[in-house]
Image (tube, rainbow, N blue to C red; front, top):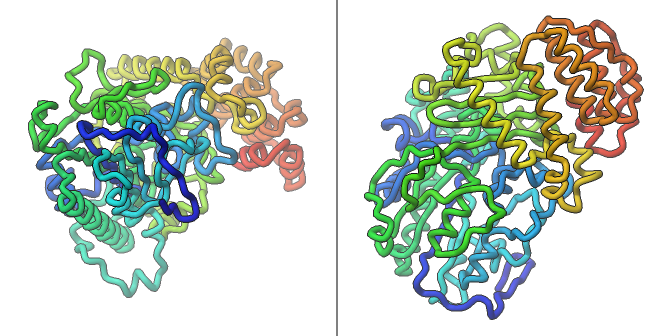
Length: 570
């Protein structure tokens, strides 16, 4: 079968299976529910075909992509794993990572069970492609129709690019001459964004693209019906990450990782699942759960190595559901953020808290509305909620999403909510240590030491990860003599990564005006450039000045491109 230059052939293991459902994933790029009428009492883009699915299925109101950008989110989707434990959370990976021992990309299990697995155009994983996963890897919207044996069930994945962030990178000529179909005066602008003519135009244009994507979904539904497959096909409609307006995609705030999710339940399966059609499910689910869910629907075993839990058709579990979000490197920009959504709260931990969210990333700022956002801040024309994007993040955030869905009021310092903050912080720390979150190591160290098996490397270094978490969490308290002693011990450690974390926490205290008595000049000649650069940041905050040649010497000392890139993100 033709695969755009690549041909794969299903072997004898692809046995006929007529009692299993077909499963379709329709991914819409860079889309949060915030822009859709079906999620906002009629405000937003109308999506009649999504509504058609919802009327014959279930709409989830709290679905999360885990990561706010495609390759990191899709790595969790295809593996069923928390991507940072695979070193798979860095967008535009410098080198693909290997899967955990004993685990395959989930379509492989479908294919071995007799399914025809086909993917329409996009993979975009940060792990090495499993060559057994797809019968067809570069198909089209109707490629499932041309499987050699029509009696075989199929798993089909379609990535629709019509809503991709790039569609909003229009020029000033387009803005002045192309009129959106949606009314620019009837858009709901997120509270953190300015209400300008350009912002309204960008929103209306995005609504147009959402409608275009919905039209393609309608064509797919019609094809399934024409082929007699609709009454045996689960259709999952969801965004591949949040976005796509300024400050959304690429950021771990709620709008950056909150995605729409609607699941069509076919007639043949509605009674077996016992879910009322047209229902709304408010449980928290995330991409880590998607692979286990569809394996369960197909009657297949869920590998122990997967981190998620199935949600569709499962009876209510006594264990509360939660979603962990992660943000690491986005193209050339390094960030390190983790979030926990549990109940009505979203807790955020920002590990480089002296950074702003607005750090420059070339691809983000190609959007005219993004550049206008930055210019308005520089001109002092934004209010406090809008300006927060350009100011220091601080180490901790807490939002009540029921009362404050736009996340305008950080409750982390509210004494009445201290028990909530403490509980969610502890839960997030437990999760990261249990999963061996590798992004506590700089990317260059991962590439140098962990590539044979990132997951095994993490398990072997769990205690070190816990020590890095502890030093980073010094950022959360007052600057006491005990804190100063711990920071000095960290930057004197034989472990370069611990030195790096000690310097990072000391830099936060300095940026917050607490001026820790930490002498870092000796580390300007450290053996590792990532330590030298963080020492230079701390020294600069303490009043030292560095010229071009000094910064170039730090970059030139880097052992590889990943270390140089990290050093350039101050």
